[in-house]
Image 1 (tube, rainbow, N blue to C red):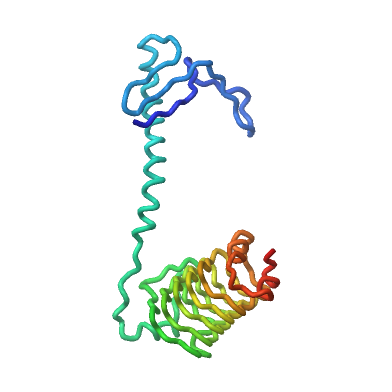
Image 2: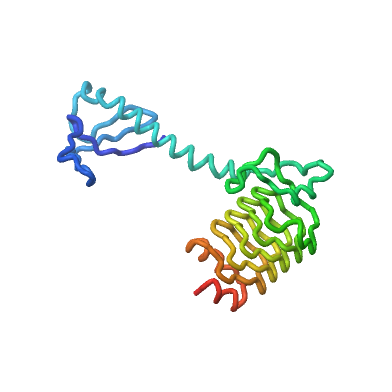
Length: 238
């Protein structure tokens, strides 16, 4: 049984002196105890007729309580059951990276998924530069030694991908999931990293010169112990 105690006046609420400041409510000393599985109970002496006047308020209060309970319970379940789409069977799906995703670049909106999972772009020096790979699925792909300068990878999913020695200069890598990715020696010069996550990523010898990143994101990034002293100094980690 869910109970919620709400201070309520017996003769309604009165608001004094309306302004942009927080309004002051006048209430009586007694409190209604609302039981969502029973009837309203009063801590003071009240006749039964007056209690019936609070049935509507009881419904609202119980509705709010139920909504909060469902919200806190449902969201973790949804997050835990999220799954990536099946691997694309399109024969030239890896080559689609050379064209990129041109629809809704910043928001990662596309007509069909840009599936680059398990693709090998090792030492690709020309075909990825400046491309839009927004919302691309990149998990377990290899980009080692590639030139990805000026690329747009907003909302890309790059968990477990390898980017060793990749040049990300002037790239937009906001809201990218780099969890468990290998980014050793990657160059993030003048690169946007706002909202991106690097949980358990390898960042040895990564360069962060003039990186653009929010304060909260920076704090999270600085917890990665694989970042070397030079990288930490460039980021301003304390």
